[in-house]
Length: 205
Figure 1 (cartoon, one colour):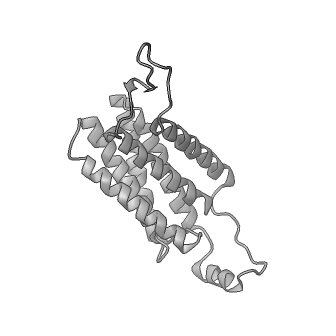
Figure 2: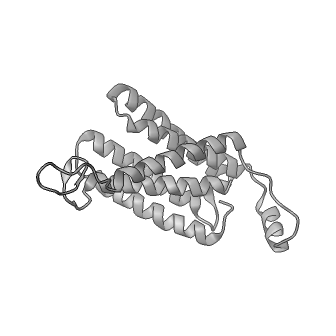
């Protein structure tokens, strides 16, 4: 990533925590839930590694190849699972895996560290980098994850429904009264966090 180090470290903490929670989620639930949790864990931990300000493993040629192989395979597996088992959310995992491959290759093709250090040393001088990657593809991915984040937020935030007949109480969806977030809500919150992290990483290209 070419953004401020503080932003990078915040993303590392956020994505590591999200990936760790998803790893724990692989121990329970139906087979489809465990597969989804495994995909989320891989995405979260991969994003944490990519966001590391020091070293930037994805920015090296060998790191880009490693990320491309791992997440390319994960994307193909997600597409196959979505087709064979009808798990629609695997399509989102496939898009996320493709975005990881794209960002790794874009970062590896960015200007070298020496040129970056020279630009940082000039601080407010006129030297600037050209954008890494393809602006059109970056824009499409930004739109996708922005829409996903908005939809995920809408699923988490309770929306008052019509007043239940006779009891005068608000309802949120099908459930009456306030409820503590359950596993589904926490999973959605984790995916929302990763979508926001993906937006932040794409904006630094």
